[in-house]
Amino acid sequence: MKIPREWAPLLVLLGLTLILPLIPFPETVQKRLVSVGGIVFIYMIFALGLNVVPGWTGLLDLGYVAFVMIGAYTVAILYRLPWLQFEGAWLFCLIAAGLHCAIWGVLRGAPTLRLIGDYYAIVTFAFAQILLIFVQNCGPVTNAAKGYTDFPGIRLAGHATGVGELPPDTTVEIAEGGGTLTFPRGARLIFPRGGEHWNPSPGVPLDVPADVKVWESGTFRWRNLPRGGSVTVRSAGYSYKAPGKLIEPNSKAFYYFLLIVVVVAVAALARLHNSRVGRAWLAMKSDEISAKANGISIQKYRIVAFAVSGFIGGIGGGLQAYRVEIVTPGSYDFWVSVLILACIVLGGLGSIRGVIVGTAVLVSLGELLREGIELGPGLSTFFHNNLRWLENVAWQAAGDHAMLKVPDQARYLVFGAILVLVMIFRPQGLLPPKGECEPLTEDEREKLRSAPTALFRMGKQ
Image (tube, rainbow, N blue to C red; front, side, top):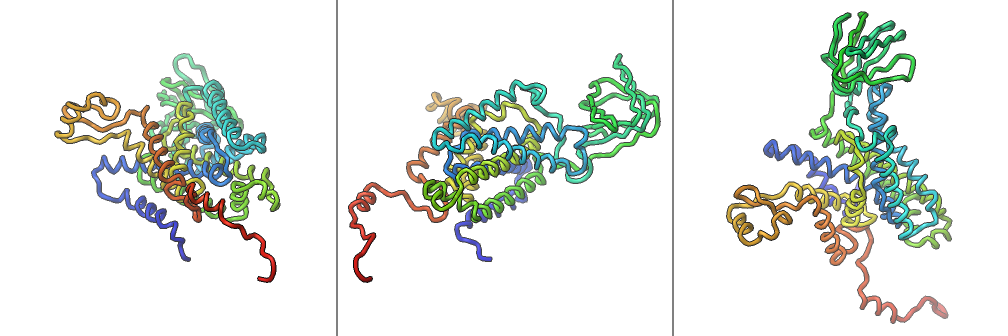
């Protein structure tokens, strides 16, 4: 199969990402590269999902972070439930997060089918802000500002957590006046953080580690055992099932896992883009009136775009939750939507390869600005003596040395400056969609206006 020439930059980038963790850098450098690579891959998934709406249908979405947040909270809430601690539960929760966001994409999009331009952008922004306020204040569902941290990581084989099986007619006595629990049908203990050494003997008190849940067999009732207390199992027959092998969030295994997800997403979206649905989206983006005249249902294909975009955003949000192992409202403010949108604008709206390259450039740059670059003695002296007024703005003092480092609050100013330069010198993006031409200059427009037309010719041809 012949590979199109325009995909060459993407294939080069794929080759670099494949060999990057294998290069023998110092251990600290290699760990940082793998960690940053994971962040870049997750934002690539976000950008690919967002690109479906503004890049292929022409509607500006300023609230895409809402789908990321819904996906992350869906995974965090589901994956900590005792009845979802079976083998492969992480994949079930991830797909559930994608489907949940697809439904929300349809629900958000259905009332806005007749909106275009700024009106649609305002509605999407308002939706994200309303949802964020709900998450911050709805304690019973989202745990309010605390969020969730007590959900397990991805385990490819075996149970998601350590599971202790209590036999029928088991009595558990809780120390410090906690009372007694009796389980006529038996019960299951869930250990999100392991539990390998928690092996009670009949009648021997045992300390309860953090975040242990007990689920009574035959019912959907479960409760948290008091942290720091102790329990005594009054009967024999306790058995323990160890969890599967954990994929550490900053490991090479998780890095390659995220890379596989990105490749699958690119392949699926490329296939969709070249299908009847993709051609309908591009027709709508170019001219809705002409698209309607050719039998394209604007409402139908917009709903499909909203669902696809939401599904990918939910998958990305779930993967981010697995990676950072914490889900809180503060991680999903409006600026996340701005960063994702900036990635696709930098790469080229509507271009899959542009989205990938733009995200790699912008997110990597953000992490580089966060890390900083240490200057040598000569430059450090120059900065200390002549550029003191830029201290803590463009550089920071590190003992006798100086370090080029932009504060976290100022990173978006750098991103904005980059986008302004792109809009001036290359408004179509770094890698625009195939077949997209350079914008016409004013002289070219004047020549076209004054050119003689020959739409109809009289006589024989």
